[in-house]
Image (tube, rainbow, N blue to C red; front, side, top):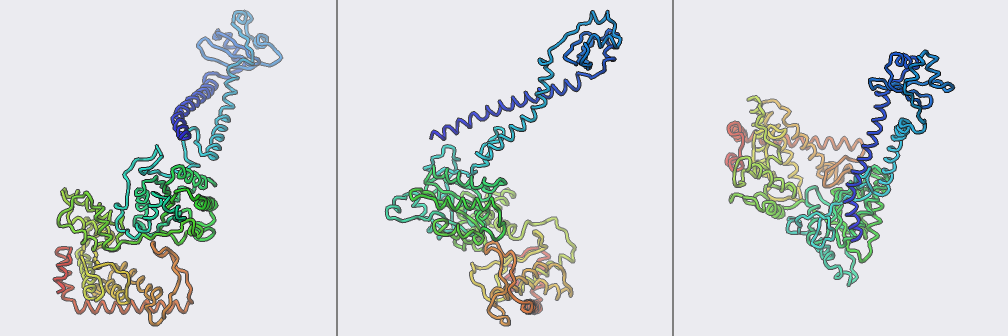
Length: 624
């Protein structure tokens, strides 16, 4: 408590010191400027004959002698300066140059001591002031780097951690930010993760219950999962449930330009947390500092490795009576150093995966809490219409729907707002100002109708939810298939049907207009990726056998970053031929469906040209 009071007093007196320093600095700069101005503008350097001429003309009011320097003050107030020889007096020098003796007798001549000259003092100040100022800055910077102080009295956190502290009900930090507590009730759709973390909460609340039986609670919890699944929110909920302080910091905040600063911040963070134990330390994006040493991206960074080493030492240095839990979050668990994952450090791994339909409904219930929803809005239907959405996506969906309702001056959020919000997120914003020719509009209508008709006639394809020729994002139109439920396993037939559906638009263009356009570029790209995955990743090719080709280098949550080739050139040629055969067969199947269903295709295309958008009930009525 005394150290905290001393810190408060120091923070209170620091503004006064700063103003004193600024005042002294302004004074010194003023003296320096005055000296320069006085030396450059007020005093004019002249020769002795010019001084004699001024004396003869009666323009000299006073003459000051300081060593070999003559300071001439004229009757108009201006000053002149001249120098004489050292082995002759001032009067003799002026008489030799022709100055009248009678005038010299009446002219006030003042002889000054050279050591007491103000100009000399000013000269010394002007000479040494820049050097003193630069030395002072270097001294303060050195102190700031060593002790985490400030430059010129301005506070910094060079050596201290910048962790943000959120108070729990038992928080001891008087300067902590008072914010509403997050509990497990605010984290929906992660019931399995809650069960695994419940014992961590109990340990923070009642550590004696575990220590009495000799049990050791996991010191570190690593939460991994795709972006937006609620890792940070879950960490806050642990601290909120236990009612303990929550120290939050990002992994990138440890690494600075100066070597050793990151390790210093780690020591300071754990020191502050121990003073307020029990507490939770949360390190977000720990892969920024915890990457595997010596290999991978960013290897060889001495500052990053020193910081990682300090984290390892601090985590392994917990005493048995220290109630500290460190939680880290990352979506790149594959690049972490193995030393972080061994028992005694992050020895518990919690996966937060994409929510299923039940979890999405629970998440929507949390995010729509307090929002005026229309009675027609059913969260169960919204959950089914949003497969693959994570918690952040669902929160954004609700927010976009509320924005649409406010823009339309409505008092309730209806189903239309949620539909428009989902389309904006999935396909991009609507581009109402996009003007295309009648022919291009007709091509787009038949292209999208081709996708819809082909997908409808495939056994394993997802139902078509909406077809539109309204421009969104970079697309001139779109066909939106939505699955009836979550799928965790996919068959070979499902891959083939998806490729056929992607090529339906190109097939419709060729059959109807006897020519093709660039509108299918994205469809071809997606179809090629699916065909390559069938051949090289899933063993769906009878010709190439049951093996994988190439090793993906990337993250299971973020996608592939490249491929390490582990097959010969001859096998690469066979892979290309197999991919091309899959695409050719799919395209022929798409053309066959378009030919057989040409009447329904034209009916749908004409309807799209008339109303621009066809919803699922109307579409299924046309296909019946």
